[in-house]
Amino acid sequence: MSVLVPTGFACFPNELLHTPKLWVRQKYHKLCSFTHMSRGGHFAAMEEPELTAQDVRSFIRALQQEERKRSTDTC
Image (cartoon, rainbow, N blue to C red):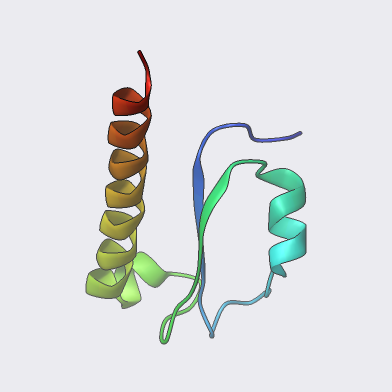
């Protein structure tokens, strides 16, 4: 099943399964962010909360900037 909403994906080095960006793009058609994280694993939000939160904030900021750009481009 394809996912058609804007999506952010984070890869953590100690994750059990490493997902190539190509595979992620095949499922998430509006991939906005693909981040290789420096630390963390399967329970990243618990292991590296600041790093995870920073990536989520960055993703949301990018979406907000894109939305502002789109809203100013319309007539």
